[in-house]
Length: 417
Image 1 (cartoon, rainbow, N blue to C red):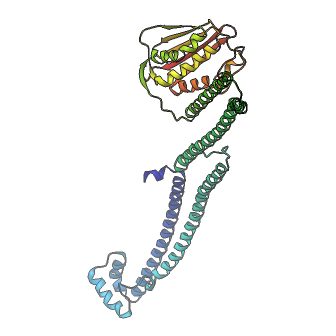
Image 2: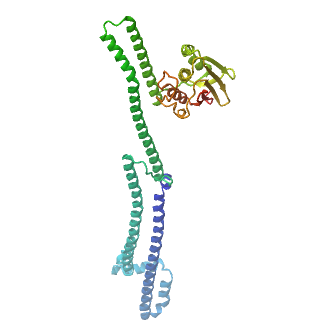
Image 3: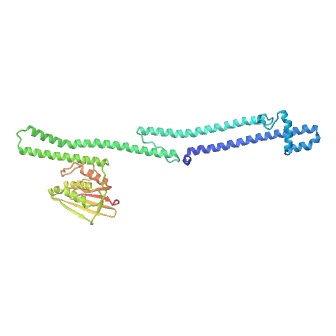
């Protein structure tokens, strides 16, 4: 019940009806007072006329008649009068309209009462019409804005700073509109992502597929091909197949991460676990380029909260990038540290560095930039690493100077530990 009184529309019509009722009651009281005065005058005149007629004929009854008119009649006097007047049809249960004095007043009062009721009903009708017109106007506005939202126009919104159910409806409608807009934008983004990734996959698979087709055609058409050449073609085909397999697996991981379909474990673990796993998977590649690896820890037993397997993959991609852009005989440093707020891994190399124009884009999918070193990657690794780290509420930043090397900083908050 209380919720009804929160609505300004209900309070408005209630207040106006209250004042209208007061005005009507005052007017009705005034009418009743006027009619009672008229009735009183008629009764007084009737008593005066009755006393004058009787006393003019029987003066000796003056005390009895005046006492009866100005005072209260006794039971015996009422009974005596009743017996006489009943002979002429005048009884105590006589209807109001049959009363000589009351009939006229009652008829007039009924006419006035009907007129006053009409006077009250007309303003009430106008009041209700005005108030409901305002409410229907708000409903029409909601309907119009709803139609705009259906058509994809989210520029309009409902007022939500008013009291009552319309204010609540406006707030909820605006929330719904906002979520619908985000949903549509997300769908558009997903469609663009799907279009881009299909385009990227097509582009990236085109070269290895062309090579495979060429190798296969040469081996099929050249019956006299030496075994050594055939073996070389088969090894090159295997390399291209491995590259395609890695590309497809990486793209699937990237798509799952961008779609939020990965549930990362939140386990307290030593930060050295994913770091050592990443270095172990790259040991052969690092030794081929004769790169020295230096691992330092600022303190013992540095913990973080995350998924070791996925974190190791992210670190692998970052260290692999450093390895590819560091010349033979170079060095890579892995520094583990912590503060009261976060755990941190710094990965530094003394490679060729990154151009300033390329630096803001290195975490973008399939971005390779300009490099003097021919890298094996195709621009997926760093994008994958960023999504993995950020998916665990971490951050990754990069600093670099051309010719001096690159430094990646990975940070994990400690709030979950």
